[in-house]
Image (cartoon, rainbow, N blue to C red):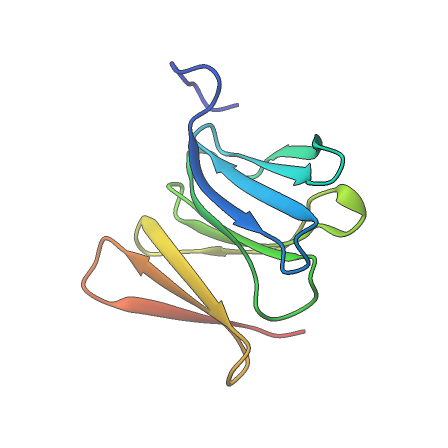
Length: 127
């Protein structure tokens, strides 16, 4: 677990699923929380990054359960949230610390990553 001096963990990013049933939160302690909106409960809480999560986003490709996260540990994770859990599908190491992501299904399963450099990196995911 990441050492943290603030309790509870600071929320860096949130994203609603496209059906509006789930909310994902990227936290400062490296964890991602998945919340069932109608039941108002946390259905999953997983440590997926070794340092703070910069951003989470429900992907515009894949299924309504596909979630993307990036963290200060310079990693990008493709996740599946089916069944109210969080399972890692793929992890990519990034050259710089990311601070923003955007996804699109146009031209393939594409995630663009803005980081501390002057360029935006594009990562393609295959099924």
